[in-house]
Image 1 (cartoon, rainbow, N blue to C red):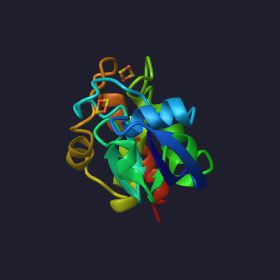
Image 2 (image 1 turned 135 degrees about the vertical axis):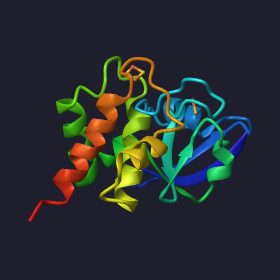
Image 3 (image 1 turned 30 degrees about the vertical axis):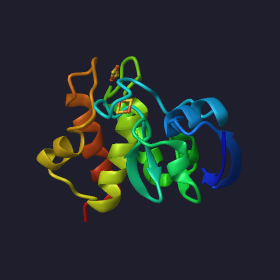
Length: 157
Ligand code: FES
Ligand code: FES
């Protein structure tokens, strides 16, 4: 076991982990943060997306020990985040989720896109979602939700 120290959702966390423990398993099992979903576990579906030092990252592809000293933010850590709230509301109104399995990763990707590009084109939205797989919605509702959130962030004069 290796002792690691990091910040998770703004709280200092210190735990013993096995060197092979993924960040996703660490968050779900050691931190009880189960909004981070695990689908493919090899970087293909996006369900496990979190922020590491402000950048989106696939937590199934990182070992927890790689995050020593870093700031990790999961969907739970964005509970009071105004941008996330706007996106979640738009997902709700646009029927952008069905089973919800992909949704945490979609929300993280949407927030990342809108924080960098508040007025994305539909193509840019689709490009941002390219690494995220949804088995239910056909993606249209998700794309619509992100564009709706974008419009609400930039009030029309
Ligand atoms: S579980 Fe990490 S990308 Fe699919
Ligand atoms: S809502 Fe079911 S996988 Fe996306």
